[in-house]
Image 1 (cartoon, rainbow, N blue to C red):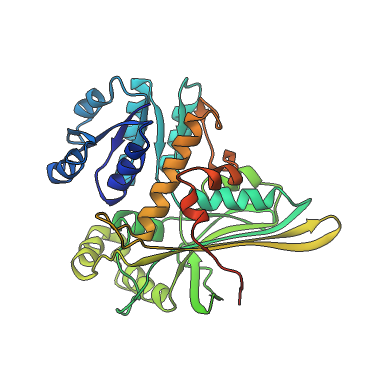
Image 2: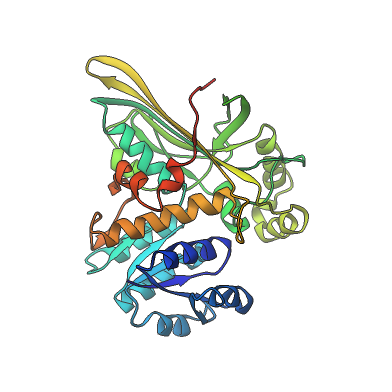
Length: 364
């Protein structure tokens, strides 16, 4: 399969190495960062130096490819999907942006190729897990999805380090959040719905953020009492973010906030990803709850150490592409994350990254 991989950032480089190493994919990484591309070409991975915001140049780079894997910032998702359609390519991305996903769904209508956005961690893997647990119940009551990409060693007041895209982080903190409450689809406010819980002996907080549910609200509408997604952070983070966004009014000047965070908040490769899903309802006449909890840690060994968010995000989209190549997913039109079977995902050579993580046995 000839893959055009858009983006040579941390996640893009990880995707490129994973796909290339199998020998089943002919990968060409497309980016405007010549330095990042040079690292990959030195490893025998194909590259094309293209300004990814130049539509004509990007369209030309996609010709002759089978599949587009988009690891660019979320605001370029719609353009990339349109170009994939024009080039006759299948399309996969990592976007958490709700508006972009809705437009990609529209683009996919009647398409002869497949369009599968939201293939990362959240949205992505978290939706696969929630759907797998939910469909085993006779009657669904509550589906709660919680995900955190956290520094292993928080040292600042926000108790946070940059582990992924600043653009994506601020985007999910500022947009309305889809949910189902008392059987009705609603839009909740970001940063609201604060709750606290402990997992594996560590205290956390969780609050509403946008995009993590993927298409689950639509899939389970009318079939579940409550369904929501919240981002997990260490206690105190949400209060300070609300101060920055609301009190200092940086919500209306997001570029300034992003600039501040990039300059003052160090990135870290020493992180941990927390995945926590609880589903309750009736099964065989009894009220039951099912729980899926994982912690995935960074890998410090080897020439290319990987952060936990790199591992989980890259594994998600690579597994989706791999399952598609094997014919285990629809081959055209819009493909939802919940169409992935969790056992097949975890058995996949890329999805095993989640299976090899540490399963949390006790919930406090």
